[in-house]
Amino acid sequence: MADADLITEIRQLRMAVEALQADFVAAGLSPPPPLSDRLVMAAHDVLGDEIFDTRKLIEICATPLSTRRGLRAVVIEIVRSLSSPGAVRRLGRFLAQHRDHVVGDLRLVAIGTCRSGRLWRIASFADQTRGRQHWPS
Image 1 (tube, rainbow, N blue to C red):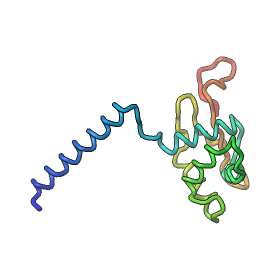
Image 2 (cartoon, one colour):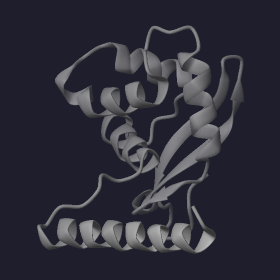
Image 3 (cartoon, rainbow, N blue to C red):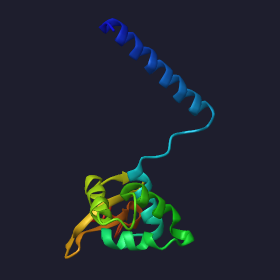
Image 4 (spheres, rainbow, N blue to C red):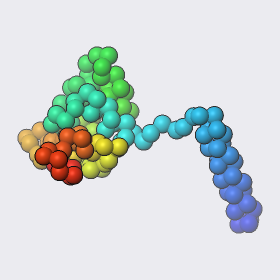
């Protein structure tokens, strides 16, 4: 296949993808938010601004309570299996890659470290202290 034919085919595919995206938007459908966005929102729904480490998050997700289904689904999507030996490490790497990720008024914040690894918190801009306009750390 010649380069010109390949370029033409790529352009046609791109136009088809853009048309499909426009159809989704017109139908009121949108793609799901990124996994990092879903994790931050679900973790905040369950934990609020509580400090956690990856092991604690896995333990919370291991119990299928109705209030934790959203968080459990997102964490399983990240680690594949809650009982796998590498689940804590996979989740830790994911969190580290998305450190300081902002979703609306929420931010994933690394607090520090402890014996079991890094400590995290989902900080909310609404949780500001003394009326200052800053992100809690």
